[in-house]
Image (cartoon, rainbow, N blue to C red; front, side):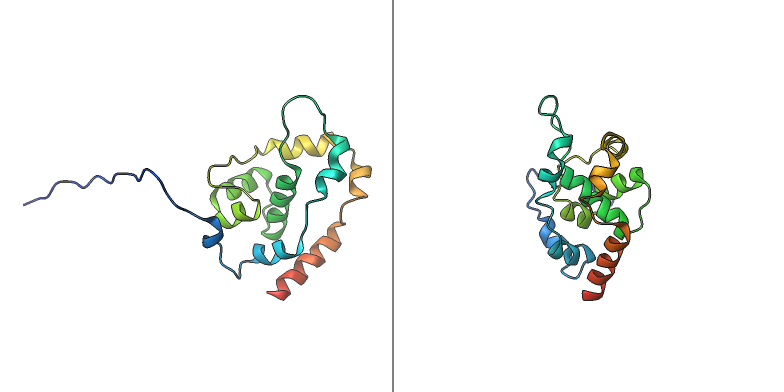
Length: 140
């Protein structure tokens, strides 16, 4: 005799912690121990207006770019998809499961809106950043 089809009923509430689902030995945990992006808002404050819609958190954008650099994600569209799907990337970017990922066009809009020379003088050079990432990998 064929039994009735079991229909799964979704739970009304879930208890879920990203912290518990990212392995302790994950590369992003190693990087997170060494970076401090708390001062980035003060460095970029002059580039943001005090009126209008709230902007995307600059720390989130930088963290997403770090994920892209570390894992070879060259497309900003692909980076947004990966951060949306990967729990470790979400954890590193300080995003909860319900938080929205910025649109890929946010990166290019910010890149064109910020004057390059002034911003680049305060940020680490690419080669230095790459060496720092290699050092973090060797510490794992």
